[in-house]
Amino acid sequence: MSIPTPHNAAQKGDIARRVLMPGDPLRAKYIAETYLEDPVCFNTVRNMLGYTGTYHGQEISVMGAGMGMPSMGIYSYELFHFYDVDEIIRIGSAGALQDHVNVRDVVLAIGACTDSSYAHQYCLPGTFAPTADYGLLDKAVKKAHELKIPVHVGNVLSSDLFYNEDPAAAPAWRSMGVLCTEMECAALYMNAARAGKKALAILTISDHIFKKEALSAQERQTSFSQMMEIALGI
Ligand SMILES: O=P(O)(O)O[C@H]1O[C@H](CO)[C@@H](O)[C@H]1O
Ligand SMILES: O=c1cc[nH]c(=O)[nH]1
Image (tube, rainbow, N blue to C red; front, top):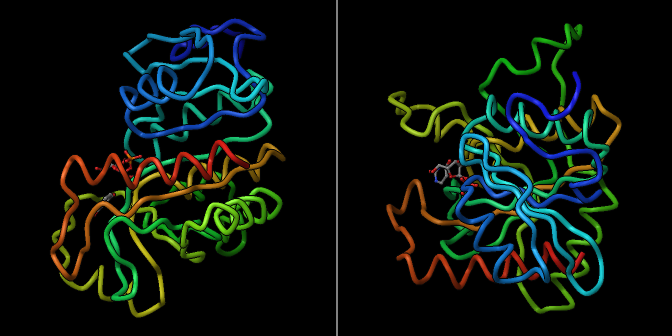
């Protein structure tokens, strides 16, 4: 595939080697305008906004990934394969599945279970365990400790379903110690593995599946800042 792609108007060199990816493109805009110096917008196709700027002198990009594994699958595939991106850090929200994981908490995803068929394309003679890049994960853990931000480090669920009508699904994942549920991490980790690149997901708990708690808009912003401090500090 040549660039620009059907989904990304960037030219070669417009995108940094490291990209932060929130699901929401407006959050990408907010991050670029709030945290980066001299941000330049490189994509508006489908309003999936992407920006490149600098943070403490280092070039970094931030781009929306959309919701769900197909969307993350497209954008991260193109970044890894056509734009020479080396590292993608997903920054997103998630619903807690464990009692000790609370709203506002930050989760670093070692691995991503999934109910999606995304891995079928690889025709593997078994199941694949999508995992974070250990170097990025280690740096994120150390940065969180340095910033005194408590984090949970463990397995997450990347589900195709935000509204799941099977009442047994969440308790089943909970019984396996899975910390929280979101919708993109497994696709990102699989694309990174296939491309020989690096990925990590940093998640903020926005709601609790079992306690039926949810953050207010203001609280989301505060917790989101902690996640950003870790992601940008790596
Ligand atoms: O906050 P983001 O990154 O969008 O992540 C979570 O929020 C969306 C669902 O509301 C899904 O994309 C899920 O993964
Ligand atoms: O995918 C998600 C994100 C936040 N909360 C959920 O319950 N699911």
